[in-house]
Each structure stands twice: as C-alpha cells, then as structure tokens.
Image (tube, rainbow, N blue to C red; front, side):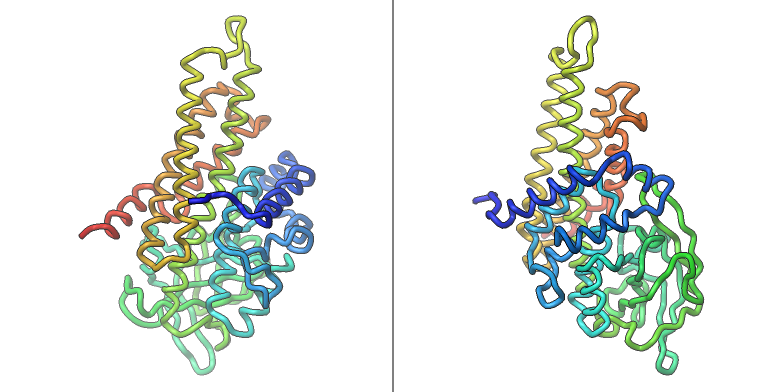
Length: 382
C-alpha cells in the first residue's frame, strides 16, 4: 500500500510548516496561552485567508477546498509540531464536521465564517456523570412554543472562553444513555457577556489552553437553533468525535517528532564525564525505544485516517486502536524526553516541558487508552 502524499498534499504540508516556522514564535504563543486571551486573532485569520487550512477539509460550496482525512492528518500533524494553541480541532474538525452534516442556512453561514477565520466553535458535550460516553446525556431540551429551552450542565468545554458559538448536545427524547433522542443546538456565545441562563466558569487547562464548565438554566433558543433532525444527531456526533480523535492523534505525532528531535539534539550537546551523554549506549537504547514507539504511533494514525470514511464499526475500531497506541507512545516519549533533559526538562525555557504537558492532556481527550481498549474489545467480540 502506498502511504506517500500526493503533490498537492505535500504542498499543503510544506506551506503550513513554512508559515509556522516563520510566523509562529513559541515564546510569544506561550505568553498568549498563559496570560493572554488563549488565541492569536491575526494568526487565526491568516490560517483562513492566507494558508486556507481552516477550509482545507470543508466543502467547496462554503469556500473550503473539499479535502479529506489525509489533508486533516497533514494539517493536524504540522500544528502539533509547532505546538499551536489555536482551536483547529474544536472549530474545524468538530464544529465543521457537525455543521456540515447538519446543513441549513445557519450552519452554512457559520461554516463560511469558519473558513474565513472569523468564527470559533466549542463543542459542549461532556457531562460529569458521562465520562467519555458522549450519548450519556442528562441535559435536556424541550419545546416551548416557537422556542427551545435547555437545562443541564456541561464540563470541560474546551475553547469555550474564546468561542463565538457553542454546539450543545441535549436530550429531546429517550432514556439517559440512548443514542436515539440526542439533538444538537447552535448557541451564539460571548464569554464576557454570555446568553441569559448560561453560567460560565472558565479556567486554564494543564496544557495552557482555555476551557469552561457551563450551567444551563432555562436557556431559550429560537427554533432554528436545532441542527439537523430532532433526536437524530448521534450519528453525526459519533463520526465527528472519531474524526477529532484522529486529528489529535495526528497532532500527537507532530508533538512526538519534535520532542524526539529535541532530545536527540540535546544528548549531542550535553556533556557528562567529559563526553556527550548521547555517546552512552544505555541512553542511545532509550532513544531508539522512543523512536520505535513513535513509528508505531504513526502507523496507527495511518490506519485511522484510511478508515475514517469506512462504515461506522470499522472506523470506530481503527480510531480506538490509534488512540490507545498514541496514548501509550505519548506517555513513553514525553516522560523519557523530560528525564533525558534532566532538571531542564520541566523549565519554562525549554520547549520540551510545554510539549510534554500537551501530550499529557491529549492522553485524556476523547477517551483514555483504557477507554479505547475497552471500546475496541467491545467492537471486536464475537
């Protein structure tokens, strides 16, 4: 099987890599992440208007390029290599995927804004009692005349503090963990002036990104806030979640490539007993083990990417296999990179500590390795 990129895909990869190398400074991005808004507005607009990566995988009829899973992998890996904090996965992969499948005037208008770098979406799906099972929903939505009324709580809504729109899951029918009866709602949002009925508790995550917990109490929405059919959103949510999981797995590959390269370079410079520490065989073996973990992760991501457009069960198996493999590799490579850097590994001055924190956070996004091993086992049992 040929795993090579086409000329167009290579051009996309090279364009993103060159842009980030010349215009995305790690020191500045850390400052924005820690003390700033958590987003470079000018960089986000440039992603849309100059690079075109915000529309690379979105339909052509909303200004996108109509790319597929491979383009998604190429962009996500490049963003991971540069430790980009902008909400590509939350907005383009999750938001774009959900909006594109829902259709309708509001969805189309928002997709056009995403492509232009003028909108950011946050997916409000996780609840305190549901863990990583996104259809385990206690948030409800009921009709009241021409309006919808939402009530419930969502936790760890990443990118909510910088979002212009929320995509909120709520149950309109069925029992708590049913896949039937799940609906999706679009909510115009402003963190500093949230809509009536939404209580927002924002915070910074361990990897210096923005998130919030939301309490919804009688939130009134117009009829057209419902995206897609009432109670029929689960299929598109499941597919978008698998696409997002694959995207952060590809992002992890970019992160791990950078961490491994920095560790090898550091081992050639750091002197101990009058010799570079990279000359000691035991450390060479450790870095070879890191390389092997990385290559296994790359193969697993390829498997997921090539199956994103397969039937639901095959796609889910491949994605879970990738997430479990990447989770193990991220932990091994991140921890050993920090150890081989010694005390410098966790300082603010070196990039490796910041990359390690992002790798650690990714372990828990869209399900841990244990969660995905269990899902894989459930999907493959006779």
